[in-house]
Length: 311
Image (cartoon, rainbow, N blue to C red; front, side, top):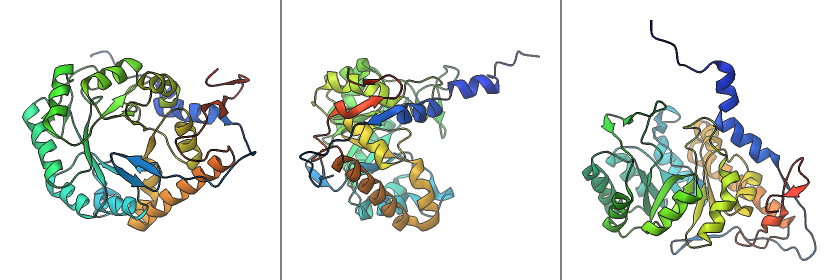
């Protein structure tokens, strides 16, 4: 009998990247500031358009199991909150239905081994009116380090030159999802990427560094030259506030919207985004943050350290 290389329950628990990410969120404390405070603006300016909130949907897929027509319902929910909507895998017909809701949608494509598939998907996204496009480069291997396969299509890691070819193929903003290092962030910038998503793909690897832990370093090297989005574990307006304070332009929310989608469809998604935005606004008001571009990172402290994150 072959040896069982499956990690035992204790090691899985210890290395659960989602648990580690949640613990890091909860380790961040916020310094209140009141003198000179104003009613804040949560407006987000992105790629020439203005949205009411930096709270966006995540690049989700296959939501029919949550609610019939769930992908389009999620899009309608985002539109109701005037929020950016992201979408992952799905058929061309589904993407067309999503974009037809009027939601400003960013389409994320898998790193298919066959680049012709990538180009076709980028072209279709543009034709049906996507707001921007991108690729989740972190979905190339399985947990054993072998090339992965997504719904019958082999996927592969992409070279710097391949990435540049995707960017030059479309005139839509091209975003790379799955950046979790300063190295990759700088390579994306050099390639001409128009935005990155700091993410570990909801725990695609054990012991992955929490996005907010690496975010300040990424924000420092990017220095405002492209938007930085944060994915994984954002559950509340306070989570969003912490991410924005540490360098994010906006945040992607997935699992926290699933319950509202299941229970109330588009209206539930809209209400959840509006509630998170209101909680974000409350945190901004109590830290004298006038808008999302002026949240001082010095107001974020590490619990138990007696130090600010940026010290």
